[in-house]
Image 1 (tube, protein in one colour):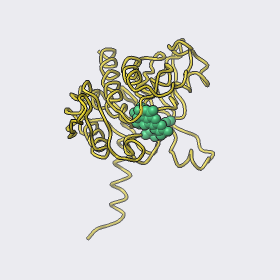
Image 2 (image 1 turned 120 degrees about the horizontal axis):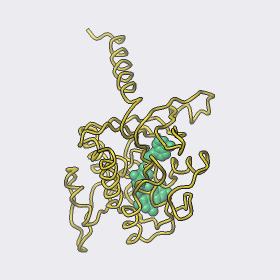
Image 3 (image 1 turned 90 degrees about the vertical axis):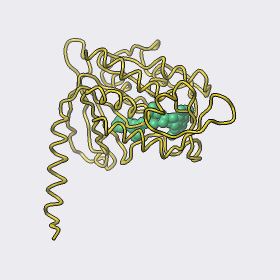
Length: 260
Ligand SMILES: Cc1cc2nc3c(=O)[nH]c(=O)nc-3n(C[C@H](O)[C@H](O)[C@H](O)COP(=O)(O)OP(=O)(O)OC[C@H]3O[C@@H](n4cnc5c(N)ncnc54)[C@H](O)[C@@H]3O)c2cc1C
């Protein structure tokens, strides 16, 4: 005999416990795209308490549609060790150095690996602001709001979570870095001091820049993936995803060093 009231209690109790546990965490990642999920995996597997806040119902960000809805993606040689660690199957394309993956398998695998490593994903939460602390106004948490509240434009106050580091994995819009510039009125550690905006397509340079410019863009705030490309005004790269994986892993390693 199944009792609907018990089902309701089980869901609400478990979610509430999980959420309360993550009012305080080591690393809060905004965005469950490929860069965010990879970063979460490499942090969680080292025992770091990491939560991801994802605006949408689904994780995976820009993965699912592959290139122009052909749901296949490409990675390059440098990222293959990560692809293998994630347990994703791939095929060598006939041109040397290009590997093709199924976008659906890739998105599912990244999500599962991050979760199994211990990362907690909070979907349907939008990060709308940062929490700051100290004289230098270091970023040390997020202000978050249920996405449906945001979408409906309801007059409802958000809540706040605290973390030692925040990671902006919000993709093209670099939403959290933009909060620091526009709302906190601070300069980022970029040549222009703000979010320069991505430049036109050039896969070779875009991919290299994605990893190279991953880092702490403001005290307490790291940028990864397309958010890093946008902050530093680097080239977009199209549906090749190696840079996103390398960026996520690099940020995790940088943060691990800082947490030691
Ligand atoms: C119009 C368009 C153009 C694209 N062009 C390129 C391109 O040139 N090169 C390229 O490699 N890829 C491109 N993509 C695909 C995709 O953006 C990237 O390849 C890749 O998915 C980026 O990975 P990411 O992890 O940095 O961010 P994304 O995959 O974009 O993931 C970001 C995630 O953050 C979430 N998010 C954003 N803001 C918030 C917030 N405030 N709170 C909570 N969650 C938030 C989003 O819902 C999303 O799930 C494009 C996608 C679109 C839609």
